[in-house]
Image (cartoon, rainbow, N blue to C red; front, side):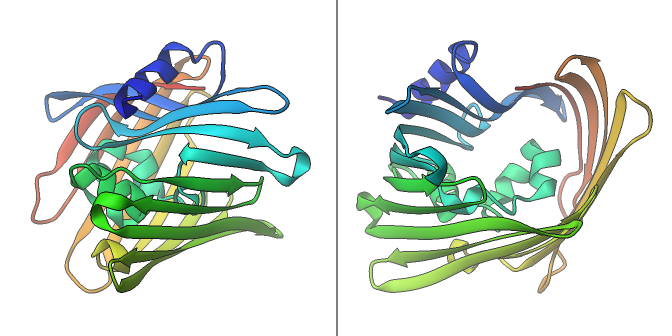
Length: 270
């Protein structure tokens, strides 16, 4: 099945499946977009199907489709085009808060599976993943690029601090490289470090925070900065709830030596 059609199918059937994620419709610098970060699962006691998407409708996106085998309290085995383990934990808060502004640099915090699908043609990673509640592992191969991608990720609470991390090994022909990341979160504050060597990116620090001004207004801020170059992004947003699991927002992102962005959004969480 065409992978973009699989994502559209997921949105259309979300009401009858178990859905997790977000869909955002908006405009950034007067250019409209539709962004999705979700997975919809249809499961029985013995087998299921999952479809999902991360990115914008158009070029910068990755879609997922897998045949799932629930294994009770152990977790779930996913075969086909599953999301890589690397992307399931220690996620970038900047990319979560300001997804459209952050997508061109998704390789800073996302798997090589995702970066490759977004930036290269005929990059079709398929394989297997095993996901439990607090950890996941995955194996993908991309035959047209002679590439193998193995990743593991997880999280654990240490008192009030949530620690999450991921590591990924990428083989391209005879060359091996790695991606790694670590995130610390306490309440509404988070600090993360990304080392995306296999994606050809600099190392980055990230700091983020969010909090409520009122019962319906949420403000969020995040900063992402390279450790080796004068490259950084700083964002601020304010979102107001207009219905259950739905909000409208204004996003401002500053990028030195690049165009700044102003966006308005309508978001639906599920």
